[in-house]
Length: 147
Image 1 (cartoon, helix red, strand yellow):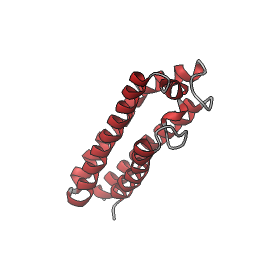
Image 2: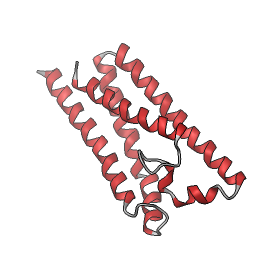
Image 3: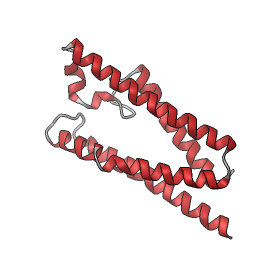
């Protein structure tokens, strides 16, 4: 099994656990659950707001499921070139976290709206770790392919 397939499988496993958590225990503080946002519990006081929050959580989980399903198809049917371009696409799409989501959660963390405090830094390191792992796997794959 090639290095790109291994990192794609690892990503699929991690994201699948996140999907399951979002669908079945969205209020948890584990696995990037919505419970880290103090506003999640507060939203329960307003049924209209909480319905919107639940909808958005399920939308995110469903979108993640689409990506995981596509990655599984690529794993089983994709050529080495398709896997290379898929990993490039993953790197670029994951990097968008630092454009909009990271500044938002960092600001909420700074204002005390995230529990535990400092979670935004942990999340940022984890997301950066994904990018680094995918980048290393991509470089290794290209080097091994050229050899």
